[in-house]
Image (cartoon, rainbow, N blue to C red; front, side, top):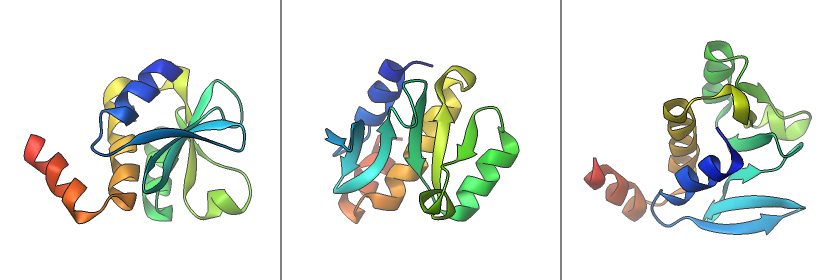
Length: 113
């Protein structure tokens, strides 16, 4: 996957706005749920729960690893763009989005399926 693929999948979710945060591109639905460019252009980040992070890292260690430091301990998970396929990235972005989206947006996404 590429940064453009990450962007396309993130922006396909209801209510998402692209912005910037500390030198990275971020994706928000009220609050940031994903970023591009950290720690470098080959990576994205999804903000998950610790349990979801552990599950993804165990299932796909080449594609996911915890962000270093305190953010990683809170579920921030790096995505290795060239090691992940579209269905896996789409799922990870949606999981991160669901943690930040309100009830109306959750219902909107569920109605699309």
